[in-house]
Structure formats: structure tokens, C-alpha cells
Length: 288
Image (cartoon, rainbow, N blue to C red):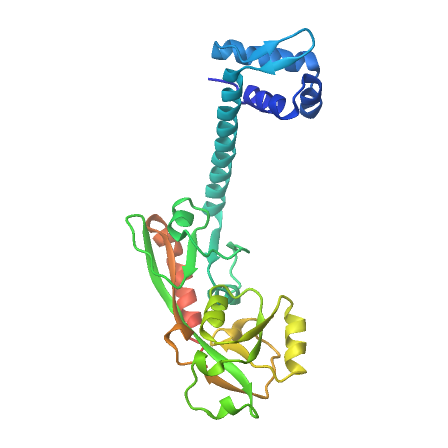
């Protein structure tokens, strides 16, 4: 078994090119580093270096050893991170999502031992769960595999908010295509909704805001339409104190109505049972 520290000294020497620079980076003396590299050669039973009177050079075998050492070091860090993440997931429930709506419901419950990932998860759902990067994922896709299962949480329904002077406010049933050519003010972090807006509203223009205070101020002093869902009212930052002089028009497109699920490893089902019930109950209380 090769000492992990010896692999680090080899990679550091390759990175810095000289014994003195590598020793300085590692915080050891040059003779101590020389001994470590010699020990690595002896442990491996191969020649890693060509030696001159004042320089040390990697042989082809040494260069290959550096490549393999880098892989082992990276794998070690990945192993360490995975173990730490697993331990964290045993004491808290870590939640990821691909849109903000389900997280609004989660946060409105004010539960302890819940950690919400800041970065939204938009791909590799099965990998994220199998690697236990999170305890559960809230997405608009049900997952069923040998290790993973899902439970229904609720539906998020999109609506556009228009001034009464806007001709669209007089139309009974609106679809995204009917909003063509308009300019909309939107929160920045809206997950897959952004792709839906931009792909289904012809010639639509979108102004994205990442500060809720500025977002609400701009809405108050303009007639720009904006979007809300049945979940928006639960959001204390983006859903409160919005203009009340708008006509709310639910959108009839299938893509404007998204069904959300909680997906998780089957072995975590009992652990998540109470959370799932609370989210379902809270979700059922909100509607337009």
C-alpha cells in the first residue's frame, strides 16, 4: 500500500518542476522531500527519476506514475466527499429541485433538519440520487428504477397578470402563443419555466430580476405583465406585496400546468414519509 502523502509529493514535484519549489509549497525541507520521492521509488520498485548533480527529472515511467497518482488523489477526494455527504444525509434531509415552486412549499413548512440545495438540478436526476448528492429530488418527472421511486406532490399552474387596459385581459382563455410580442418581468431563478416562456411565446421579451425588492418596485411603476402560479402566494419574498391592480389569467397550455413528484432511494421511503405527507397537505391548500 503506497502512502497517500508520497503520491501528493510526486504530483507536487511535477507541478512545480524543482525540488526547492515543491518543498516550499509542501512546507518541508528539500532533503525531506528528496527522501519521500526516493521512498516512493523504492515502494514501487521502479525508477521514476533521472538524477543529475543539481536537478531531478521524471522518467517516462515517472510521468506515467504522475498521471496515475493524480487519478488516485482525485478518487480519494471524491471518496471523502461522498462519505461526508452520506453522513450529512443521515442527520438532515437534503433536497434538490429543478424549479422553485416545490421549494416554496418546502420552505413554507419551516421544518427543522431540512437543507435545500441552492443550485437547481436540471439533469442526471438518477445519478444525483444514486450518488446521494441529495436525499430527495422535487421535479416534474416521476422516476422509477430498481433503487428509486417517486410520490406525487401536487400541480403548479401558471398564470399571467395583466392590467385591465391590456386587450388580452378580455380574452376568456389565454395560451402562451397569445402573449406574442409582449415584454415580461420575471424572477431570475425559475428553472425550466424560463425555457417554456422563451420557446412558446413568439417574439416575447423578458427582463429577469434577481432581487425581489427591485422586482416588486418595477412592477408597481409599470404596466408590464408578469407570471405567477398557485404556489407564488406561499413565497414571502417573491409572492408578497405584488401589484393588486392586475387581472389574473390562468394559461391553458399543457406546459403551463406542471405536475411535481418527490423522488428518492427506496431505502429512504420510511424516513421521508412524514415530510411527503406535510408537503402534500400544504400543497393542497393553494390554488388560484
